[in-house]
Length: 188
Image (cartoon, rainbow, N blue to C red):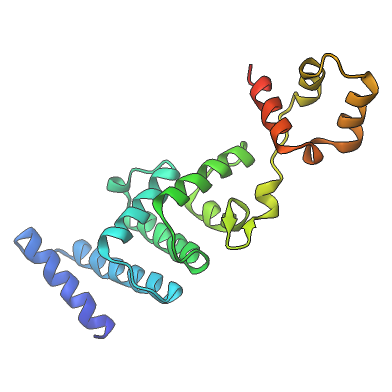
């Protein structure tokens, strides 16, 4: 089936669903939707069923603070392109993975806005892949007041030990369990 056949079938189905002929804007939006889906399939090499495609689309939209039901055609194209880009490196993509990486983005880049394209751009830095956690995912951002919190958590430690941990080891070389304890106490 050619693209023209697929687009024509989609327009016919949309008209039947609405019970009338499509106006120019509806026709263009339907053809664009088919085109975007074709691009997504070409980029990933696999075809998604309609439900999975919708779930992934909605997950990206909601993760970035956009109501999927109120997306303009420009935003739909942006999401489709980002989804195709992400699926090219994560073929088994799930809505949960999208939400997890969006949360990681918000944690790592607190001052940056989370957009659909920024999520796609930093996708590889935000999670795990087949080789395990990426370097960027292993190295978290340090809480701003962790150096003041550490002595309170270790009241019996020698001042030299605390100084060594802060000045020599630094945040990235402290154990993950200690980092988690410090984060929890920094929030208090």
